[in-house]
Image 1 (cartoon, rainbow over the protein chains, first blue to last red):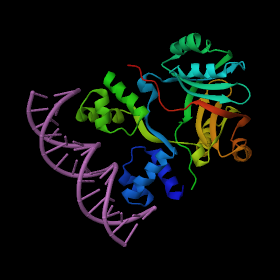
Image 2: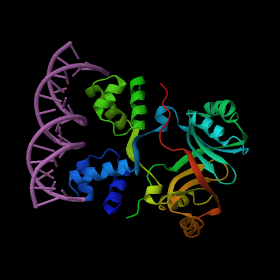
Image 3: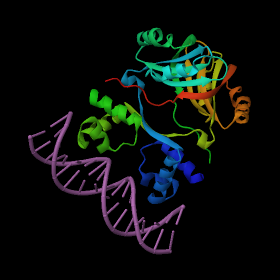
Image 4: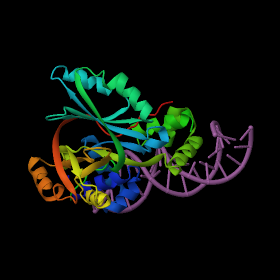
Length: 149
Length: 149
DNA sequence: TCTGAAATTCATTCCTT
DNA sequence: AAGGAATGAATTTCAGA
């Protein structure tokens, strides 16, 4: 991977629907080599995919909560499999040390969160503590990774 | 916004580079009304943008850390502005209660993190405590919001 | 690996229902 | 609002440097 590839990654992280021609212009190539590079990056798994970024409030997911979950050491796989089945859990990390796990949850409002907490989160297999932190405001949105030249 | 719009959002979150024709087929429309809807969703800010999802390890950002930062109540704006200038901070939230703020940081390795911690994170204006948690493994990646029909 | 041109597919507009 | 046809762009392939 050379600097042009990194330029491509930077541009496509900013706008994933750039046309190959426009992208080619920005990185100083014509469209055929540019397309070959993009396809190669996709094939190599450097570009994992493309997605539309949706406004949470516009789809009734304007209330976001960070949830730290402490759990016993048995049934890690079962615990994580359970997480994957809860669509409101939009992001989840296994951590070293405690808490063992951190989730980002997106729901409509506090009432919806209360329901999720009661019915799903506290019922996670092996969970011993569930601690919720309301997100007041996203300061920086998930998405682009910095790509150094 | 009706069910077709929600279908469109669901599909474009899975694959942001779908052609209008392919998308139209999946949601049961022909391409002209489908394109009108997509443009409308973009204009209304429901679709905030499109981006390529890049493999962190492939661009030297395979070491990720969750950082909770406690800070004094002065200079909130200054603190958050400082966060925006640190490219390694790929995600940041202002929280209610403590910790006041949570960051996700992406760097190459532990040594790079140690340097960032020393030079940038502990130097954040108003920060009174910086607590780091290494991410062992992402269980669920950030990206798609659930869109109910 | 790039360029440039040719063939194909797609996006977009306009008009009708 | 949606469908269908027409046009202009973009993607994609391929031969040659």
